[in-house]
Length: 278
Image 1 (cartoon, rainbow, N blue to C red):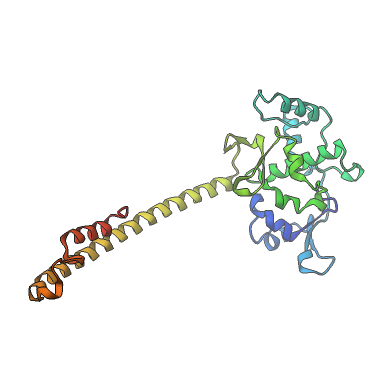
Image 2: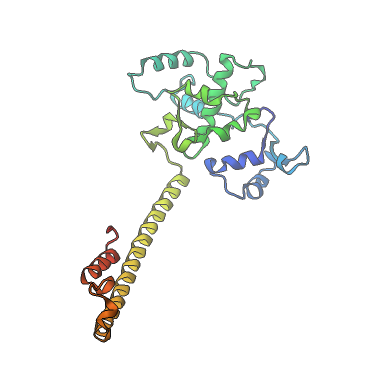
């Protein structure tokens, strides 16, 4: 387990469960199914301190995505770089970083010194592995930072991630810092889409279609109401025009205004049926 104490806080996991595709009821439906691996623990008694604890360690499961690829290729595990060839300095820094031995995120970090190159390598491996396990190959840096103690992450995690642009892409869209795994994308498209991602995308498309149909139907209903309102006003104006013969000229004045004025009436209907009119 990547956590230093083999435990993870439930409330912190809940902040990231959408990224990993966890269902809302994972605590009562999934965790109890594997009692030989997990258990719920609360050593302080506080509700916010509930944790999922690893009961037994299986080394066969502690294989990172990078190690899986290296085994298939029968090569030493190493990071890949997804940068244009024109980024010469970034490529040089990447080659220097990648020249040292790969450190598995599942290895025991207690022998590593804070701030050392080995610790940096292990942290990059850990973030890479976490991103590989997510549905969209991305995570909120702020929410990831909440696991600083458990994963022994540096205080300024975003600074470390920005040092490795060939491996990670840091986005600040909508003023929310997010880290993406570069190798997981081809442009803006995911290379390998999890089945759950495909389902969510199809559901999103259906929602967009439904919203478009709703807007069109709402627009048609508004136009129909305006037309009916105009017909009623038109009939009422005819009745008012007939009644003007019974009104004395002194009461109206020499200049007839308001909706009895033909020009004013034209402007009124223009405003009524033309949304862009002044």
